[in-house]
Image (cartoon, rainbow, N blue to C red):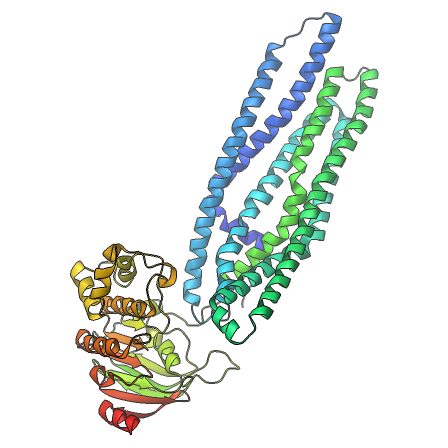
Length: 572
């Protein structure tokens, strides 16, 4: 029986457990600073009043003890506030770093099958913005609520000892300003705070679409319409945030007004007690300033509760990703794989959603160890889907794939993909040096193997021309290199992996005919003894690299020919 996940707030608390020591220290220092500020105000009021009465009456008074207490409270208040900032922010940064790494580890098994429905901007928003929003749960909710609860309990206890009626009055004011008002603020702000988090993620996705798809938007003449949708969403989001901020401000002002109303009421009870001889006049001044300072504990609560729903929404979005089951089931341990694996597709059927058409529809294909095969076909024929199925990115609905004598269900995805080097259509380069980009494939690669891979990828002249050689930074997404250079860097990285199977998806895209032919010749020599699966639309240089051509249509292999026969037919 499947159990429902625990409430979001409880899961958030569990997520904070590894950092509870730092977080408790931050709360303790914040409480020390708050109590010291209240004590400073109360003792100062008592001391000034007592000194004034002593001066008027000529009585003696011990001023050393209260003066020392005032200095002590001033020091601990300053030190507590400084320490609280250090401790709470250090705890927050530690937690954010750990949470982001935790979420990323949980996302890896979901890619790409479970994450393909999310736009990259939406995924980035959940990985970054939603995780960042979780800091409010500690800084803006837990800390002020804990400090207010403990601090007000101390104030109420002291007030009740000095004057019970004052304690009851402060209790009523604390319930109104610390419970009822924050609850009202949270209820009024809940919808806008929740929708603001969701619309913020949507806005990031639309902005990323506008940046990455600007050429397509211009080509279809919809750039203006897309910009208008972004502007409308941004205006709606800004309006929601203004309403939440207005509620936060109103809540803080109401607490201030409540403090100003409570003090005269307390003075009424206190003056009656003074006239009756039940309360010394300096204690009345202390009570009045004690109450006024205590409301500083309640001032952050309406703001905290206004942010609470947005924090819960961000947490819920994060946990929705975490709770998503992987599309592909992994075994606990991989079975042994042959050093030179054969690959066999047997009646494979696969689609990306239950209502989607079949991407692979009864695919049968066998690739012998060391064989070089080209797969050709029109766009949408299923060539990329064949690669996704082979890499165990998506589950099969029917049939099986055997790799090195083992079905894919017997192999863990990471172990399988270490034996298959892939050059995808989209080049993946980071804002790192050329050397770091190459070492992603083989962190322990030697200088000799790196130079050999660079040579085989036809990159010798490119590296020689770089201002800092292998230490030259390529830019975000390879922005500082051309498309053809980026393709060859990715090819060098795949060759450096030294996997027994090499999959090349349009490896010569962006290269001129002469460079493409030279690259095919170099790849033929560099991949000798390895299995090669080449997906391409280009015929030039095909005979140099592959021995056999499989023609794909509607998700299945319809014909296999030797390369010479295929080229003769294609050119006829």
